[in-house]
Amino acid sequence: MSQHFLLSAAARSISLRSVLRMEEAEAWDVFQRIRWDSTGGKPVCPECGSLICYDVSRGSRPRYRCRDCRKDFTPTSGTLFASHKLPILVYLAAIILFVNAAKGISALQLGRDLDVSYKTAFVLCHKLREAMATETRGMIADGEVEVDGCHVGGYVKPANFKENRLDRRKAVNQNGKRRVVVAIRDRDGRTLTSVFKSEDEATGFIASRVAKGSTIHADEAAAWNALHARFEMKQINHQEAYSADGACTNMAESFFSRLRRAEEGQHHHISGAYLGGFKRSSQRPEEGGCDEDAEAAI
Image 1 (cartoon, rainbow, N blue to C red):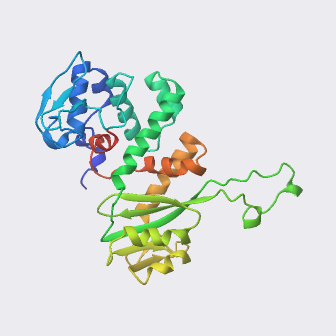
Image 2: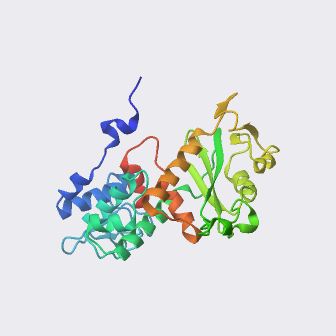
């Protein structure tokens, strides 16, 4: 049996130890190689895309000038680190800590690791989540696709005395804050997620983000019946089996397992307006090392 990629040395393409041993100039070189990967780290103008740029550095921070549009820029221009105040080593370390945390990382923990304030770590985490979310904009899944939903939030605290407790399973006793994270997982690609009030509201989103002619694997939920007209559906009743007759949603379930671990072990509470950001950071690639997510963050 072959070794899983994430257990191999190739998956450890960049480590926190190697970053913390770098000098500032070396850290800038790494940052440039990650951002301008297609040119081997050579600067590309963020304004016009020109490849002819001159080095006009002043001090230790790299600075370039585009020959075509005559604009000056730095390796952080046009990224979430533009006009940054912390050393570049801190941002590289933050990226590594964030993307290597398969079950999420709290802002308090990141702040302690980097020796920055909670507010700084909180903003930095959300910037990284936003950058990673841009990677799935316009993504279309095709081929074998798994679709599933996971209910998050809306916890209703039970009353102290047993005689005062209500049946929280009934809609009338819920607070209306419960949301559904719907995952579209391409078996040969990445995972696309979004948040809805119910699975019924997600059918239009699924139809627009899955290529026509694809095969969708889903559970027995009635909400997915509306997809039969557009896609070949393979549904399975999880009360009878987890996989049968070629139908299986285990990959989508694995995404939700990480989301649950992040909620229970790291963040403790995820709901409301923040749910859309936190659910994205639970995704981990099945192949590829840290560089793929690091490039998305930068």
